[in-house]
Amino acid sequence: MKSVEEARHEQRSATFIGLLLFNLMLVLIQIWLCFGVVENLVDGKPAMAVPAAIGSLVCFGVNVWMYFGVVRLEKERL
Image (cartoon, rainbow, N blue to C red):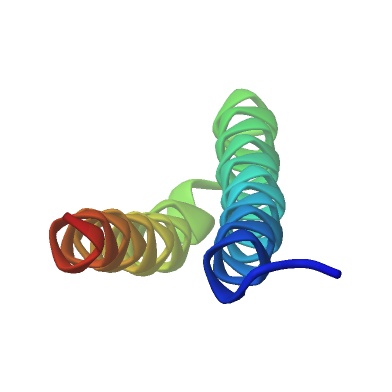
């Protein structure tokens, strides 16, 4: 039978893995936006640059928010 501390450790590990996977998804979205902008710029269509930059900033903001959440969880653990 697992102790409460072992169960909490497993739960934190699963949460951290979930956050990493979500972070990976956001980074892939940012890369997709970057390639889309570059492709449109090569075609002479700069109209997508501003919306893509806004979307990328939103992804970055979510990543920063998750980072500070993980730091807060680590401080609470100690």
